[in-house]
Amino acid sequence: MKALRDTRHMTVRHLMALWRQPWWIAVSLVQPVIWLLLFGALFKSVTDIPGFGSSNYIQFLAPGVVVMTAFFGAGWTGMPVIDDINRGVIDRFLVSPVRRGSLISGRLASSALTTAIQSVIIVVLALIVGASFANSVPGVVVLIVVSVLLGSAFGCLSIGLALLVRREETLIATVQFLLLPLSFISVTFMQKSLMPDWMQSVAKFNPLNWAVEAGRGAVTPSPDWGAIAGKTGLLVAFLCLCGVFAVRAFRTYQRTV
Amino acid sequence: MSGANAIEAVELRKSYGEDVQALDGLSFSVPAGTVFGLLGPNGAGKSTTVKVLTTLAHPDGGSARVAGFDVLGEPARVRESIGVVSQAGGLDQEATGRENLRLQGQVFGMGGKDLERRIEELLAQFGLADAGNRLVREYSGGMRRRLDVAQALVHEPRVLFLDEPTTGLDPEVRAEMWEEIGRLAGAGLTVLLTTHYLEEADRLAAQLAIVDKGRVVAEGSPDELKRELRGDAIHVELGGDAEEAAVREALARVDGLDQIIYGEDRTLHARAEDGARTVPAVLAALDGAHLEVGSVTVARPSLDDVYLRFAGRTFGAAEADEREQPAQRKGAHR
Image (cartoon, rainbow over all chains, first blue to last red; front, top):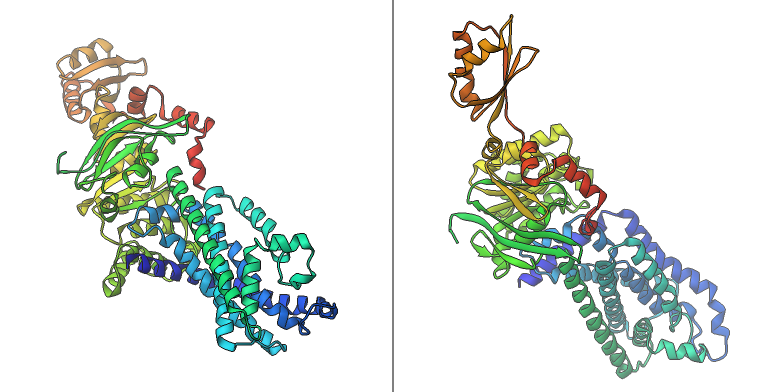
């Protein structure tokens, strides 16, 4: 109970901090819109490639943009943690009876909430520009769930890394290094069958790809629920692994205070 | 262990890596309801001591009790009983003063109207009533420091740790902080204050431990420590044409006066066990010998003199040493 309460208090703190940054809100709302419209226009003619299957590229792309938005946002979860370390905020909480886990789970919860809101906005926008989502609400819910799972996993990685390196430059470099390759070695922009063989093999181990496949599958007519459940399971397992990493990084931090 | 002590540290040891021995058998105890000062230059081990006593850092050896609870065995009970103002402060800059206080109360299990009332009380007490709804980012250094202290007091702790509470503040704001801390001490709270300002320790702490290289090198009240330097310095400026022989003869009858020097500038220098008590006798003796007195000053030895005696180097030199070899452990702070 105390753990849940503390998580709630921490979540409110993080959400208030975001709410006070109108620029952050504006940019994080506009960015997926630009992706959707820009990439949608740029790659429009890939639907002409024989074997692509789908004829509406925006519809193909929209679930990928939802997942990518969650992924890109999650990468930066560790940045305010470094700020907290430098300003003594983490240490202040460590000498209080706060549940240690809430310092991580509060960040994950607030980022899950923002991810969910962003996802809904992207879906609505995609509908406006002519995409359609099969399986309506359940499909979209699955899409949002896998996005949140992926975001939480990378959020854990980002927090863990922040606690270990404690330097913003290092975290920025690492996150930048991962964002684009992981986004492109996936079915976000391209049908799997049209990717080079080696990329298809690598994509099998890319959590972002799991999320796009599961999310897109869920909003496609007559989905393969078994495959979707399998991918979701993989994401849950990945999240657990990342969670363990974050907790260990936290313990390492505590030892070096 | 005595129940009357709010803090007991016994033979604390801690090293960071192989090179930095932050604590090297540090021991002291603080009676409940008093202000205790840990005085030493930067890098002497004061902050590490606070980290160990507040359960933040794990000592390599030794033991400690705070508010009656074992720091290693019952850290959760210790945390419930203490308030901490660290050097870095720990305020959320992107939240308002009120929100900072509220969150602090909430993690201590407070809530509802009681918490809101307590927040109002603290904002008023620390002169922040008008600033409560402003972001901490916009606060001045002095306001932040006051909020730091208010935040540490939300849950009404029994023991308050103040780690260098006035470092980086300008003199005027520092004086205000001293008044605040002085008031807290009157309210029955036990306060552990670390400082590298001699004047601050002198002014606020009832008892002091002088720390050097991770050990306590001297302990006592500021006045006791200074008295160990064989008393106070008395300087008397004599008027007219006072002869040294006459002066010495006059003073021979005064008890507790030694190291008498009568310079060519007709100024008498002497040391007394207790300057304030000796001066009237000195004046009476000089008056009795019809010697005219121009002025009298009694200078207490400063804590710098005390530090020099116990640590074997002046305070300024110790600080300079530390600057030349900045310890790794400072890295975590801004």
